[in-house]
Image (cartoon, rainbow, N blue to C red):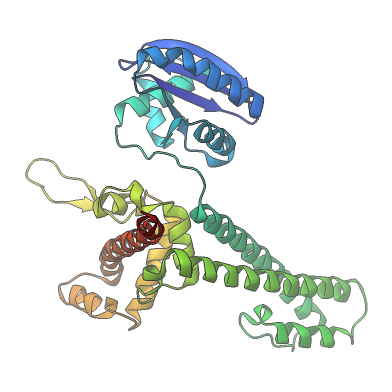
Length: 356
């Protein structure tokens, strides 16, 4: 087997090809455009004789730098593996060549891919990628609106300390219109800036609401079973669908729990068997979405409240009980995603069966 590791930058990709025992077969640096990617595919063809199944490319999982390279390689029919960044540190320390350079980093990526046989394989972008892009964009707009809302509140307090603004009121269009009418009584730079900020809040709220409606339609098509989980709303489901990027990548619910950061980390030796600690790794966005579902169920929506009461009766504190509930919800989400995947596969295969 030939593994080609990459070290990616904004302008160049450095490639190192290794055989199955880690011996270096070749090195090449290409530009980050279509011509450079084509030259890389042509260069990798020389290693086809070493592996009857073709070469494999291992890309460090930094999506913004490797997204275009990944899509071009997949379009050319190549097999691509995603290597988490944390695996490179150990591979670099065990390298025969000391120091740090682009070829050394590319070799570390290839070595990590050779040592870990269960790395996720990259695929061409699909609907899940669209959900992730829209969800991330909506989150960015919400952050912008929150920052502007803080500035508006200080400006309005300076103009009229007695003016009361409801909590989260700047998200509501009617509140913003009332404040704009109130600002007509004031002149000066502060009033002008407050008026501009309010108009920007109004514009951001319209964009956020439109994105949420678009996400609702997409998630209902892709993951209807996920939305049936008590406490799982459209936004949480969109984060889960976008970050999971295909539940078929995970062999079972335990592997998915490690991905979501809900699987505890073992910390025992000798007679202290069974001790675990909190897992602070995994995908924190999905972990946060699971936490929001758990908090909603803890308020009496769904089966989470009885489970929490049972854990509290056993002596667990509320934080530990919520952590256990997140672990159970990870399995529930995995089952729902698998059910949606099977349903979509049946929908795709049904016309083929009729045609036959």
